[in-house]
Length: 204
Image 1 (tube, one colour):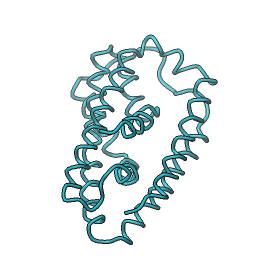
Image 2 (tube, one colour):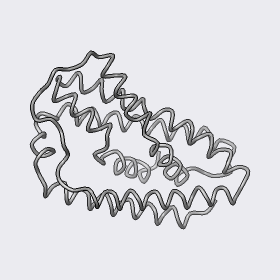
Image 3 (cartoon, one colour):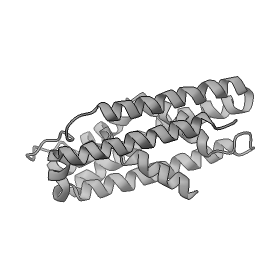
Image 4 (spheres, rainbow, N blue to C red):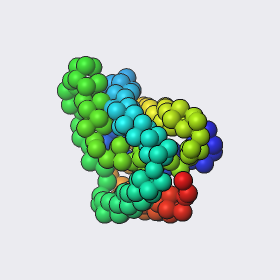
């Protein structure tokens, strides 16, 4: 794993998305153990999107240069869309400030997996994300993408766990700081813009 890939993963993972918010919310509601279970479940919800993107891209990159270009520019457009959506968002992350009744662990796991499994944006994101770090045309392109995807999932889980465990100590910052979230979203938007530019100039 290159340091550039690690940094890119961290930029993506640290965006307050549904999986992270779910892990933090479950931690606030039911304690850090429940938050860790929610973090694992949210991470597992990435698997269907990863497999779909990996095997679809493997075929495209080995058979059609035009198809690769279509996927590439769709990825550029999607990353720019994410940057725009990030800048559009207003206010702090919305979570329940008061603890509430926690569902069973089976429901926590089921909801966590469903949250990301039913998010169609993840497949498109992997199609924009993985090609930047794969040696296209090589014999092991598919295996390389699977390994990179697994690394992304591991980092996702670890980050979600950290946020879940620290949820009680940082909840006021997450819940109430307009200034923090404004600067955070601007930084994320710029990062997405740079990723889009990098993908736009990449070659098959």
